[in-house]
Length: 165
Image (cartoon, rainbow, N blue to C red; front, side, top):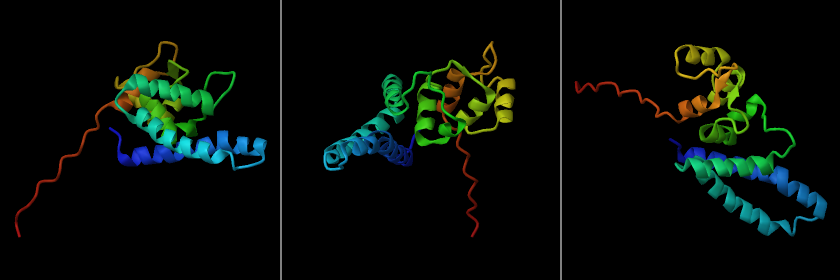
């Protein structure tokens, strides 16, 4: 379950990445910021929409949005393989909840830990207890990571109230 804070954080991050990866290079090429005003405003609106899609309940739409954003914001000839720190970003967390790893059916224990925000030892313990699926070729399946991230969180019960005054 996502919160308003998750949405706001993701929008802010998307706007920063769009500025850095798309608008700043265009400003350099065009030697002017004047033409970019309307594009900048439109991308801010789109960032709101993309964040809502990534965090929304429609997994297919979220997956397609994640693929589009990753393809544009992180282009390359090789499969997308972000550093472990990327999984701690708002976009990384949204992608992990949406698709798992967009380019791998299984990842190392270290990457699984980064995706889950826990240590490699924590991942090992979850695999050992059957809470995450071990891939036959080694590592952890990204589908089991995604499923764990999307599992309803248990809420601690409120402490019993004492009506003694």
